[in-house]
Amino acid sequence: MIKLKCIYNRALSDSEIQQLYQTNNQSVEPSSNDCWATYENGKLHIPCIKLKGELGEELHYEVDMQYKPLSKPMSFQLTGAKPK
Image (cartoon, rainbow, N blue to C red; front, side, top):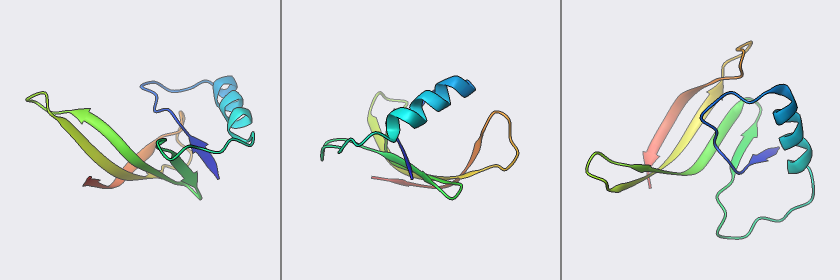
């Protein structure tokens, strides 16, 4: 299982992905305050996303996404989202 700590607004290069993979495979225990996205078997689960609403309010969501096979760059389709 790969644990991601950041969401990027652009496609990452192969070398950036490799660097993240190597970093994430080091033994690091997350604290209870961290929010970790998990990717396993083509499924990406992001337990905490914070967005600004139209009126400036904070909106909190939990989302699930599915990897789109053979997509370059690697992309995902939203399969579920629920407010937190």
